[in-house]
Image 1 (cartoon, one colour):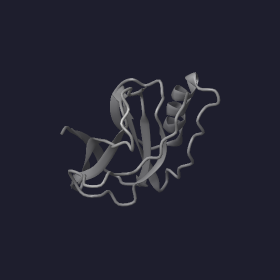
Image 2 (cartoon, rainbow, N blue to C red):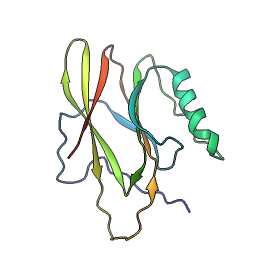
Image 3 (cartoon, rainbow, N blue to C red):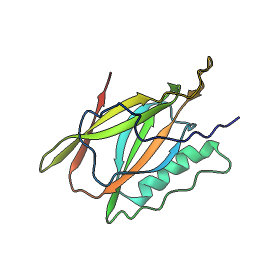
Image 4 (tube, one colour):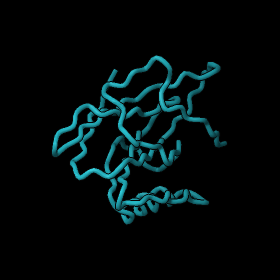
Length: 145
């Protein structure tokens, strides 16, 4: 059984570690992919994006469509959360920016459910964001609470 849940960007009362990233938009998300390791990376070309979707679509019928991204003006940030229990959402924020690098905080925030359930499904979610293209190295720092 597959449940589709609406995603809220941030829960009320949570303030991110850094500042909002201008122009960042969530373009795709799924709770059940065949990637069981935690990680975040930047995708700067259509070939790499198609390769990622080819990987996750190996176990899906029908497969997820590859989002359309203009890589001459945008880049994509892929966040795979690995194995998660409950409804966890990543919150990305900018910690610092220099001439050469942007440091992004990656926090995992548990979404409060409307009703309490005793059984928590195990998910392997991914989130795909796009943002305006920058010619800088992007690094990720996982923030634990």
